[in-house]
Image 1: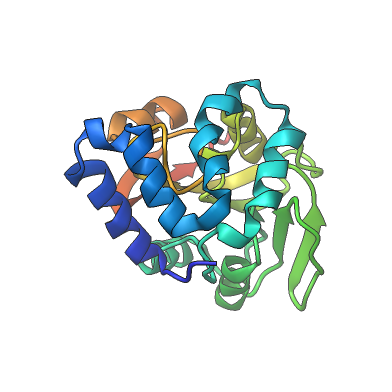
Image 2: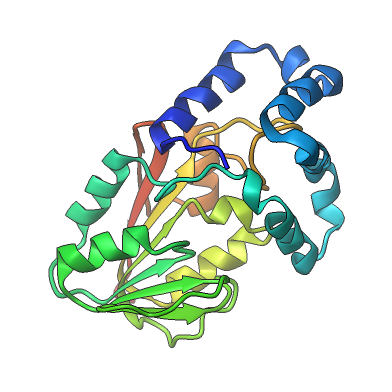
Length: 233
């Protein structure tokens, strides 16, 4: 695995997206050389992913993540430090919080220590509950909790990986009572990228089109952070 912070990744992606011309970024020969150097023998999976993903079942997409697990960037969290600080500042004390698609639980632990309430972690991987954090194995497309169950729902660097990301957005809104916090990467769509993203949000209007007009959206150290106050209706 490659060990890089989120801040480093954002700089690297900025160079790829904005410095290299599209004729290079979408050139299969040149990019295959770069991918093979960085990723080894499994580089072909990255090269083919964007072309194949519209025809893959969800289980097949999950298989890509399993096969390529040892090529992913290894870090405690996909959130940059500034985003984490903003998220914690938005969560009040003694709140019931869901970290949807929370991965290894790094952010969930930060949230629990900060707010002191009950923190839930939802992810598709096998994990164990820990002090103050209740883990549920499940899909963000079908969250196993009732409407308005959580005061706050946090979803960071997850929706770009979900093919039916609008259904996922409906689900996290459904279980959210007060405040929804979403973080999305600011990245341009190219055929060959060092990730398995399905959706891309290079501009503010892309985020606005996806989330709608109710969300307050800002760019925080290279990533989009959106905060939506839930309606009382």
